[in-house]
Length: 513
Image 1 (tube, rainbow, N blue to C red):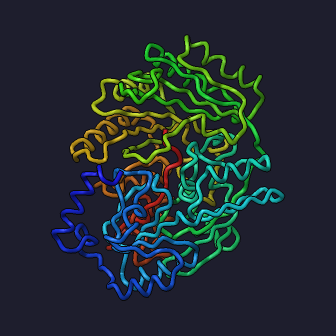
Image 2: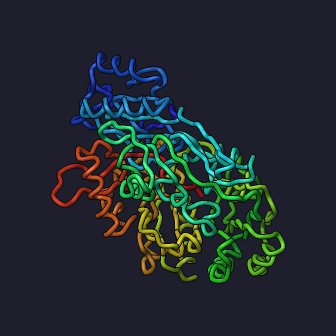
Image 3: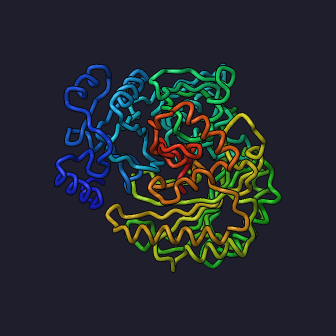
């Protein structure tokens, strides 16, 4: 991951020539002197690292390896006090702040500034009597699912056990049982937050409804969340798995799937993924070089009723695979089978009011075996409890019926022209669904979106104009110096404000297809 990243090697070489690795790309960001760093190190429990220090490269790297933070100062926070000290130091020295737990949703890499790594803060505590879980900033969903399952409970997690809980939830959280129980953000009871003035605050809907609600669905940009408490659901098992169709049945399967989504109950959450696997020897023979449509099912009702519900899909024709079964909820990650190894990728998405078969089939052809780069397309069926209105939280476009995602795995050393090819293909695919497009999902933005020329438009599209203006006002009030600026989904400044309109980078996506 480190030695093969030619893009980063070129950065390091350029930085070396400039004599200052922390400021080679962003000369306006100051670099604290060694004495100041030593003073910070005495105040915190975790490590304080600078470029060239042992452990710096490992600490700044995450699941997304196409882009990495290159901070001037890196604080490996071990507790909320470390986070507060780091924010205070950044404020004192004029350093912008980025945050990373697992790095799944890295959306704007920082050059210079201060990075807070929260992966050491991985505590998870389940209160079975209250039906709640309290997690620290670096906790991942796999650990929460495991702890909750001991008590016959389940969180509203996404499909990947390695995704960070906090950033997923701040983006709204569209998960395995989304249609049945709604957004993960709607289950949150309290948030511990370090604001731009380095204060540690405990927020609830009663204590600070505006700030609490803005964090839930608004993404990052208003502070650093150090802990969160949320409700769990009494779900111990489900009926789920995949129905897989080969290339000759893809169009028929897509048509049947869209018809089928009009009939299913809210207790069934599903998606369909379109993948053309490369012909590589390390892949199983059943996948190598094949184009497949994988319909993923998660149903909280009985096996018998689940079998009845999926019968119209099985009737499409011969299946390449069918592993629908009853499973403990702790195995819910096997439904999507997300990759667990760090890799490079680029992605985009659209939230849709509807969709027709012809448009979806055109997307399948554009991104299929003849595409210039490999694509993974996923269509999530939304609605159900997700559509329940909430003026309290900042989740945008609750009325969306589908989420369409396009993702391309990349070689970290690919030249910029290859990355542009992938982005152009994604734009072409999403153009096919333009008549139904409502905006974007915070959770499903993948790649270095903070560096896009249209980053401000991306932010607006995630929330809609009215909600975006509300978030902009809160951003101006709580972070007037724009300390947290490395995330394209932070509320843009009000018109006329000269400060940056971006904010904190984190782990924003819910699940990789």
